[in-house]
Length: 387
Image 1: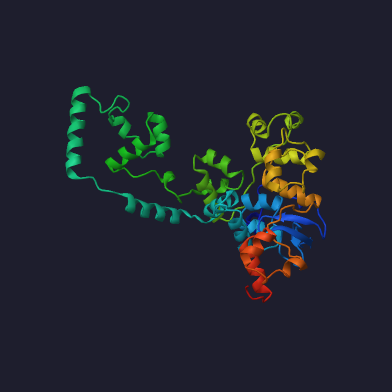
Image 2: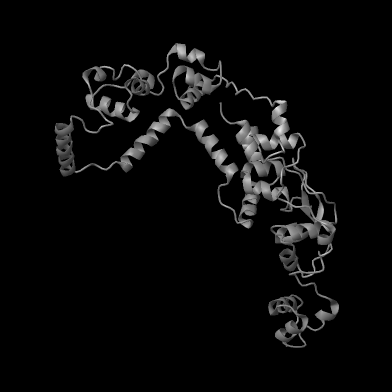
């Protein structure tokens, strides 16, 4: 049972909602700055696009959150863009190559495509690289130390008693795990002693050796339940079921009790998940579906007094005065339609363009209060010679 297309592009940390805006308004884009909205895209999640374009999405709001956490195929599928576009967005946000969604996708692919033969081959290759033979002098020294310790105390270590003949007879009669439980020894000790005596491993511990009775049980219950019932690894049960083409039985979902729903929103989601024995993601999704607000939200609501400061002072000064991030100031000002009081881009007036070429660029820049490069670029674009 390989991963389906829906599972490949599934969003893990949603839901995501587009910002409320309309054509002609302004939004702050993490890539281009403040841009004019030209409408909405036609993707699965409609999103504002740049003015006079059809597919140039504005990187803002929940889309930024999705790019930070979701995998590239999932973002590309739901927002209707290419995978390379999502890669450019990650580079613009200065993110790592692999985020939580990408790692989840890689683990899912590894579980689906890693066959027992391939895993044994990888293990053998790793052993050849990491195996370092011990020198003969070291082996002789360790042998002498062990012999003196046995002659002095009758054992190698107080927690590691010597092997008795009746214990050796149990080796190979069952899996190493069950023999270790019977003898009260570690699994590594059982494996080492069995290998030293040349006793072959039990057939149930060999990957791929399944009996007809065990195969008939596959698919009648979830893989975890079958693994506990047969005394096998859950991964081995999953691989054998996939090889035989037997559909998976999903884990039964635990219904939400009324007393559990009453707890949501009264304490932080992380504490609620720990108290209820559920995952943090399930608690967050259930609280969102029930319409219960989060306890102590990270984002604070804007007041009228704070809104009056927008557009009067530069965004940097407003950020320091209100104790909010610069991104939140820009988002709020763009949502209110307030122009930027200190734009980084120079908007030229007809009277200012007449000054170009009448004096050195450095003097005109000082007069207009802008960088020299801005004056030079504008003069060259108009074809005006330098003074």
